[in-house]
Each structure stands twice: as structure tokens, then as C-alpha cells.
Length: 416
Length: 150
Image (cartoon, helix red, strand yellow):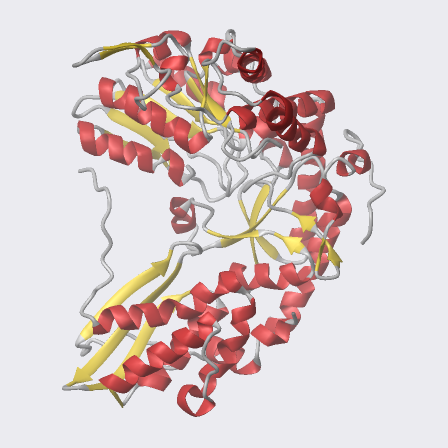
């Protein structure tokens, strides 16, 4: 396979690919086929250049200096916040706190909200398809507050089993923390329905947007979630970029998270007062260049149009599911591309995912093998690990073909 | 790199027909560990008698490299004096670190795993059973610490 000529219905993929320098490289003598965007996305030239431009021409600490460079750095940092707020439909940039990504965002809520608000016997409702980063922070918060964790179970075909929701979501539930899109099953849970049900019993809702925000148009006002976590590096931005959206009144009421410079209003010998929202949560020098470059990633995605991004991925995911099933792969997760995203977990015959990934690597194909930080999902379906292929704006139908063809190699090595 | 550097016949044979893969109730030492990267699990059972490792068995699930390494390890160390077992562990680790040229006489089938050195991320798979064996010999059970609310 060489350079693709593919143009999907929704996106001009050949033109998009030309923006991603890494897609020009080879693995051994094979062109790189990158099918691990659920772990981290590749970066277009525009994002790489935005970060370099910040350091080359505008580098100074934000919200500190009086000189021109510092003014520019501050303006660029705040412009990125405004872009991110607009991208997710937040009513006000002050509702967006910059963080290093979803893990830090969940931990922020678990410290600054949960430890202040939860009492013994209160319940946090999770789902069995959560990433460890949306489980472990709640276990730690529960340990410190006496709160109890409960889980929405999964159906055999990778959906949330909501048949018993009434007994799981009660007036004891103070928070429902749920993924917007499962990173191992691809499932898109019915967030609006869940939010309505949670609010009806007085619980808040945190949506883990690590996989949702990069791939699906998101409007927090429409979803009516109370918290949304955002990972920049999964949406074409740099690593350690991202944020937390929260309703403003919640941010006002929450405790501070990390203590340090800039998050304070005044410091005395024995206490301090906090800066205004969102700065109250941004202690120390932030990842300024990375958030600025995340702004460039958002520009890039908005130019493509998130509806087109979603349509392209539905097309690719549908094709991949069909081809994988044809050759006898076992799929974990829903089979209808309309209710799922483009992260496809599978087993191919009896080849262990780790062995499969090594064999595919010889063909230049990068997939993920492992538990994907979702051990509850692995246990639910009785496997130690799965192979996972995941797609983004630069992936093509030809790359899906390359994946399926390379599976035959695994068959040859293992004689299955 | 070629796939037959890593997927040698002897490795695939131990993977498909693992030796000494069974529970050993009479074991004097047992230790369980997993590889958090991939979820592979190994439990190693050791029957010691004085300064001798009489017999080693294992249970587990995982990729061909972790499971074949465990299988070959049980054959290599059973019936050996403790001191020799420790030397083998050092030799195997040295081979996987790429700084010991392995002796076939000493390691037997295990030399087949030397190709894994070219796949750095898979070295952990090959070494997993050996980590567990060493921990067992040091009296460890593999129990981890962690957060357990209620």
C-alpha cells in the first residue's frame, strides 16, 4: 500500500494525511499504518508549528509579567481556553480549567469536589466500562470519605445494562461518573438519558470525554452534564494538554486542588484565599505552549467539521467491523457503528493480542494490545487482554484492508 | 527483524504444549504476579527440600512469550540446587538484558528466547515467570498494596 487516493464521503483524507508528517515514515520497509489513535492521536503540522511558534516568538509565563511578551503569552493561553470552551459548547470560558488531561481532571473533581461533599454512606455510581482513570480516583475518594462505589453492569454485546438502573441510581447517589465513549468497547452510552435520570435523584454527572470529545460533536449545554473531562492529546493536540469543564456554580463552590502560585488571592501566615474561577485550579506554571497548540488542534477539527469527522468514522468503523467479522475475529462491543465509536477490540482466533501486535508491527501496523486500562471490561468478557484497532480523521479503508490482510500472517505463524 | 527470530518452533511448542502447567498443592513456596501492561498472569509453585529446588510448576495465562518462558523455566530449574537456580536466574536476566551471551548448555531451550531482545517491549513478557520465581524463593507471595475502600 502506498499513498492513499481515498476520499471518504465526509472527509478528503488524502489531503488530511498530507498534514501529518509522521504518516510519511516507514516501519522497516513498510509504510506506517497507525491504528492506535484511542491511545494518542497523531499531530498535524499546524499543531506542531503552533507549539514551536509559541516558544520561538512569544514564550513568557502567562498571567505574570507586565511586558509585551508576557501579554502575548497570556492572550494566547486565554484564547485557547475560549476556543476549547466554544468547541464543547460551554457558555463561558471560565467554566474550563486547563489540566494535563482527563486523568488529572477526574482527580481534580475527586479531590476538590468529592472529598468536600461526600459523607459516609453516600454513593458514587460508575459503570463497568470505565477506564481506570474514572475508577481509581473514586476508590481513593471513597476510602477517605466513607462513600460507597456502585457499578452499572454490561450486557453481553457491550452496552450498559440499564435494566436495573432504578435500584442503582437512588437518592443516595451523589455522582454518576460515566464515559462518553468506551475506550475498549467503543460503546457510546446514552448520556442525555443518564444525565436526566441522575439529576432526577439529585446526583451530579461527570462525563469522561477522553474518547468522546475528539470524535463526536459535543455540546455540554445539550448534554447537561455537570463535569466533562477533556484530553488534548487524543484530539490532535500535544500531550499534557486538556481540561475540565464544570458548571460555574460548582467550580465556585469546590475546594482548591493543587496549592501554589497564581491559584491564590492572598496568602497569610496561617491561611490563604483563592483566586477566581478557573484560576483557583491552575497552580504553578501551566502547560502554556501545549494548551496554545491545543487551540490550533481545535481550529483544525473545526475546519474539518465535527459532523464530518463522526461521519467518516462511522463509515470506517462499519467497514472494519464487517471485514474483521468476515475473517472470524471475535468483536467485543456493539456491532452497529451508529451507536459506537472507532475503537474496536477483538480477538483473532486463538492468537494472544500481544503476539498479534508483534506480528502486525512487522507489517508496519500499529495497534494496541492489552487491557486498555479497563480490567473490569476484560474480566466481564473473560479475557486477559484484547487487540484494539482505533481510527481517526487520517485513517483509510485501505488501512483497514492492510490490517485484515496482516491477520493471515498471524495465522501462518501460529498455525491456528 | 524477522518474525522467526521471535516465534521459533521451540517457543511455539512450549506455548501450545506447556510443561509442568498444573497446580501443586504440596508446594512449599508459591507466588503470583501479573504484568500490568498486558494482564498476563503467572503463579509459580516451588517444592524445595533443604537447599534444593525439587520441582517447579506454574499456572497462568498470557502471550506465547510469557507462557513458553514459564514452561521452559520449570524444566530448567527443577531438580537443581538453590545456588544453581539463582545462577540460572541471573544468566537468563543477563541474556534478556542483552549483556550475557547465553550458554546453551546452561539454559537449554531457553536460548530460543534470545530473539526477544530485539523486541524491547516483549522482554517483560519473557522475564515475568522468572521475576515470580525469584520472588517466591525470597519468600514473597506477590500480594500487592492498594486502595481498598470498605
